[in-house]
Each structure stands twice: as C-alpha cells, then as structure tokens.
Image (cartoon, rainbow, N blue to C red; front, side, top):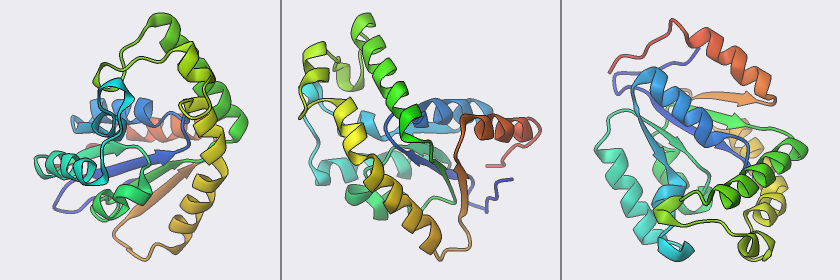
Length: 189
C-alpha cells in the first residue's frame, strides 16, 4: 500500500493519452478528499492555445503551493518534471498497451465531439480537429506512445529517491484490485 510522510499524500498519475489518468485521479480524489489537479486544465487556454513553459510552471506551482496534499494527473515531463515529480511521494504509471489506449482515446474523442463536451478552458473537440494531424489528440497519442513508455520505464528504473513509492499498472484489472485494498486505507493530513 501507499506510504506517506508528515507532508501528506502527493500523488502523480502518468501514462499515455487515453490511459485513464484523469478518471483514476478523480476516483482517488473522492476517496481521500484531496484536491485533484489536472495538468491539461492548466496547460490549455481558449481556442486550444498552449501556455508557455513559464506560464504553465507558474500555474502549477500556485496550485501545488496552496494544497498540502494533492493528486496530479498528466504528463508534460519535459516541461515540468522538476516541479511535480520532485514533490510527489507516490507515482502511479498506467502502462497499458497501445491497442487499449488507442481505443480509449478514439472513443473519448468521438464522444466529446458528439456531446459537444466543453474541455479545458471551454475548448471543444471537432471532427476537423480530430482529423487534422497537427491538432489531433489521436495522432498525438499514437505518435508519442512509445517515447513516453521508454521515458517512464527509464525514470521508474533509475529513480533514486527511496521516499517515493512507484506503482505500475499494466491492465485496468490491476487498478481495480488496487482499489479493493483502499477501502479501509485513509491518509492523514
């Protein structure tokens, strides 16, 4: 089970686009009563404009500083690895296969388009955006899948901080087994 120290739970969830990072983060946030910080919400501006690295880091630091305990989901390692990773005491990697994450990201994107679901800063997905390679989350997910997997594997195998607990789930069923063990476990603030 997860460890924590006097500073409380600071959990980071990483994985490919479509793995279910935000869903897992919301579930854990409800269980622990801890703030969920979704990195995509901090990164994207209206009209799908990207935040600069400086803006993004500032937004993240603001959110982390006002919360003693937190659950962060998202990747962005190249931009903010030294900000979130250094303070996390639990890192969960959803290391699912490409077939599963591809099905999930395609299904989620189509559902978002059909339902006209407002995403980060009121942005919406469109079929045009989905089919435009430079804008498509589907293309991005498939294109970055192997690179992220190699990077996270390296980080997991070479992390030297013994105060950090690493959990790697390779199948959704492993996450469900993990939740069964959390029913009685509560973290102190």
